[in-house]
Image (tube, rainbow, N blue to C red; front, side, top):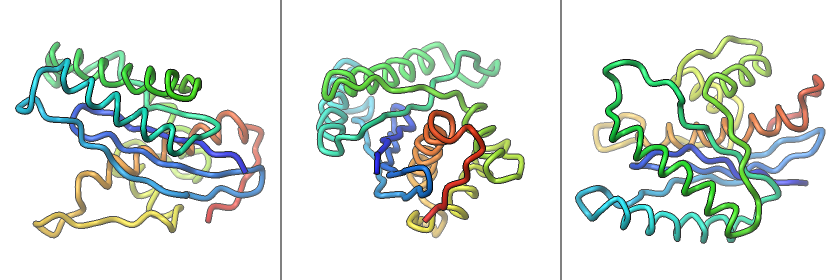
Amino acid sequence: MRTVLGFDISSSTIGWSVISFNEKSVKLVEYGNIKPPSSKKGSLCFRISDTYDVICDLVKDKSPDFISIEAYANKFPAGKSTARTIIVLSVFNELVGMACLKSIGVEPKRYTVSTIRSSLSKFGGKKISSKEEAFDFVVDNFSEFKTRDNRSGNIAKECFDESDAIAVAFTYILKEFLDNGQRPNLS
């Protein structure tokens, strides 16, 4: 079986997942999240340096055959993101890509949110148009994925980042290996 490491990247939480697969079977192996240092802990340079090291260690440890990343948006809704937010997001996204390339020589494949949702929709036979619907798809299709509650009793925010990383990795499998209509068993 081959493995793909998927990343959902932000400056506050980086979700990751490892999925093993062949033509007949797809299995979620493990998942988790990384918390980059907050802006209160230091400069952007410090934050990305620390995160780079953690990502390199993770990638070397998991040693996947393939890596996929959710591409950062090239369009942002007016009033929703500041220039600073967009810059920080793109820096973190590129640092993850660079860490993958430098640590094991694998350049990640990038997928837009619309491509990810479209791939999940085609596979599941139901339109997925929101982060919540993508989360539900992962919960419904990957029995190994377990949610956790926060102190308030709601699903922890990190579960959504991990779920997105699973969706990113699964999209890689669907687009690069199974786009010919094959339907593997999800376990």
